[in-house]
Image (cartoon, rainbow, N blue to C red):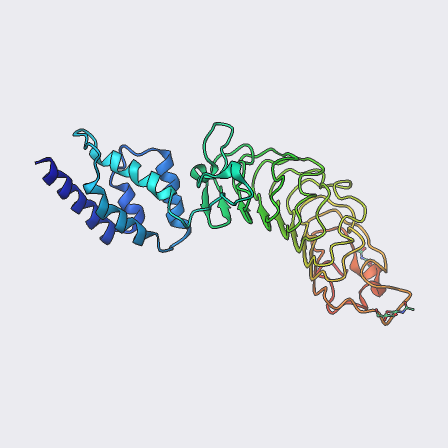
Amino acid sequence: MKMLARLVLGLVILDAAMTAPTPKLINLDSETYDSILEELDNLYNYENIPIRQAEVERVTVMPLGSRELPTSAPQSEEVQEEEEEEESTPRLIDGSSSLEPEFTGVLGPHTNEDFPTCLLCTCISTTVYCDDHELDAIPPLPRNTAYFYSRFNRIKKINRNDFASLNDLKRIDLTSNLISEIDEDAFRKLPRLRELVLRDNKIRQLPELPTTLTFIDVSNNRLGRKGIKQEAFKDMFDLHHLYLTDNNLDHIPLPLPENLQALHLQNNNILEMHEDTFCNVKNLTYIRKALEDIRLDGNPINLSRTPQAYICLPRLPIGSLV
Ligand SMILES: *[C@@H]1O[C@H](CO)[C@@H](O)[C@H](O)[C@H]1NC(C)=O
Ligand SMILES: *[C@@H]1O[C@H](CO)[C@@H](O)[C@H](O)[C@H]1NC(C)=O
């Protein structure tokens, strides 16, 4: 009888796995499953990858397992089991590099509440997604993290150790948090960081940035007149996008790296520029050919006052000319 019950249950689950979209399978037990399973739900939404294959295989095996089936809420246990097995599928991030014995678990390092980061967030290959989780700090990340997304949280500060030793990190996206403070060396030692997105925060001061950056978006912060260091972008030879809109900046940060393609400064407080902000007044053969997209609209600047300032550019800046 018990065996039959297991078999029927197995068939029901198998059927659901084959026919319903994956999130619906989880929803079978909407009364009992907890927030961890919602995380899994998120995982399915992020990637439509061959997860269902693994799932179907697992489900067929499950009824034959040696576990006792409780009579009250059997499906709840099924789902929890699934969740555990889910986290051990090989495509999830695997911190068990031979160099890093401390991160042998597939769930990544543990947070302060002793909760694995890759159960709290979603880790797919070397990408960690922590969007919209009400986080108030950056969770400890697996050593091989390359892409980190933690948008729409409540992070207030970036500490010097938050990204320590993450030598493969290429992109950090912390859009829409409450960041007002960043430790001076929080990003400095990231040898492969290319894209840094910090838009929609409350940042008053940019820390030292790695020169490997190609894309910087610090729009809609509070940089004001002192938030950007002197010559902050000078040595970023690969920087092609610099977005600094809505910051109450009162100057254009100089010098601009040679390969810069887009400079967005809308809605700041820039009053004036010099004839050699973009060009070289002493050398009329100089051409800044990469810089095609300059936005200065929404500033109290009158671009007609510096007619010589654009002669080396492929296009005029956008902004007030009268
Ligand atoms: C003027 O600029 C051109 C193009 O960048 C460069 O090749 C040349 O050496 C410069 N001349 C002087 C006098 O700096
Ligand atoms: C902008 O500058 C031009 C050239 O100096 C001047 O003729 C014009 O009146 C200025 N416009 C405003 C609104 O100040």
